[in-house]
Image (cartoon, rainbow, N blue to C red; front, side, top):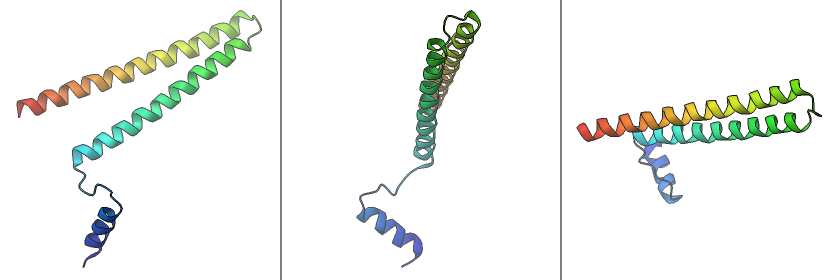
Length: 97
C-alpha cells in the first residue's frame, strides 16, 4: 500500500470526499474568498457606523464615516458583479463545449 492509497482509505473511512476535481477545488477557494470578503465588508460597515456614532456631531468625522461606508458598499458591489460575470462566462463556456 502506498502513501496515497493510505490517505485515500483514511479519507473514505472518515467520510471525506477524496475525489475533488480541479473545478471543485477552485470553487472551494472562490467560496472561501467570498466568505472572507463578506467578513471584511461587515467589519468595515461596523467600523463606519462606530465612527459615525462617535463623531459627536462633528461634520468632518461624519463625512469620513460616510466615506468608509460608501466605499465598502461600492467595493462589495464590484466584487459581487465580478463574481456574477465570471460565473456567467464559465457557465456559457461549459454549455458551448
